[in-house]
Length: 290
Picture 1 (cartoon, helix red, strand yellow):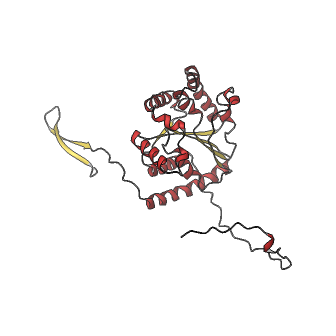
Picture 2 (cartoon, helix red, strand yellow):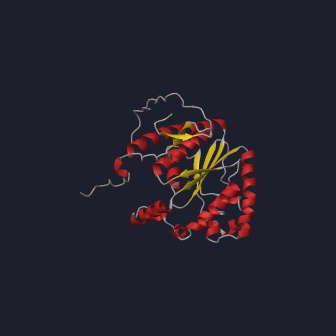
Picture 3 (cartoon, rainbow, N blue to C red):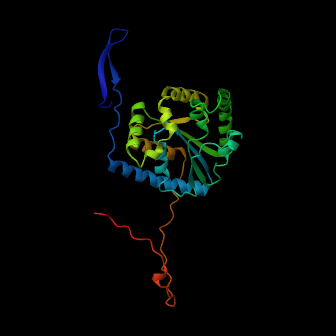
């Protein structure tokens, strides 16, 4: 019995006193300091390097979908996942608004061309689930198209899985209050203001519609073969670490770290003469104004 357990006395049907253990609600985890967060992130990023090597060596095909409300932390998590990885093996797909031509294609067509080949992992920063979210709420598609999407997407994802693709879906959940705080922070910071699109601002006025759309999307697409994994993202640092740790747990891998690299000596050639330095155009050195 843990120290968090409380004991209380009650009587059973025979009138005898018996001990009942009452569990206290689990307390929320305290916030990580920047130092603690960076230390844990470094450990996980080393493991991501090992996972990357395993994916390449074994010819795995991995697709990871990142969905959620605007400012829920998808982009920040993706950035930390890819920060130390080889972009030739692990790449991010963030598609723009479909062109007029793409609008006439089979809905999944423009996503299929970005699927991984053997030895690759693709992270979709928003995906085909746009149809069940922003397109539906903002009126960019019809209800018939949404219903057809709900009919098609489980079959589509099962086809991907049967083809050998490892499909992992994350939904980043953020509270109304935290989303508003992040929006205001972006408005106040000119270096982050570009992250706020007119669509982001409109999403604030349709909070309930987005909630209903997400609930229905889960009802149709949270399947046994392809479940949704929800990331509580009100605490960005914990959310990033939790998502990366979970991703690592979803793909069994082994450490293929090669032997330490020995740097060969630099080639020497005493007959080589460099051209005069004056013939080259150099970038002016940056000077700090004090």
